[in-house]
Length: 186
Image (cartoon, rainbow, N blue to C red):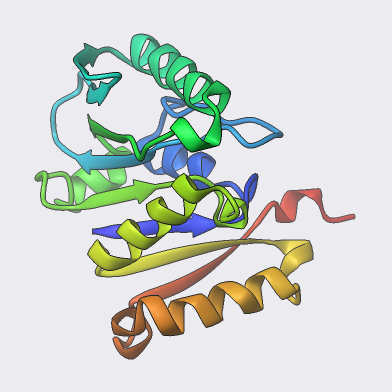
């Protein structure tokens, strides 16, 4: 399992969409991911999503339906008062880019996990999402906006990793930094 973390709007969902080769996860110029999104890379062409929200189990198929459902769910979670929120896990099975399929990584064993921006850690649910993700991941992509490379937020995140996920920092190659939004450089 590889976690994808970073500040809000650093491009976590955009990176996953690029890996999947389609826009199935909502993206926005403002914070929009509100649940832990577990993406399993599979060979099947028809993506499927399942989750429990409000005590109701839901299962959805098809890119457009999944996109709309995730977007609505994220908005619903964000509209819920913080003290009433709980961690929601989404389980998405989807084929990846043909290059990855040809490489044999779409056998269902690789999972990529997207989560809300770690800079929203003042929200207890986001903090709990981050703690859960760090405990279960074997690897980590840390997305950093090009203009945040020397930021205090990145230093705080690295300190956080050293206390909450020392297993990741102790494993060679387990943590990869991805500099995002370099297309906005002028």
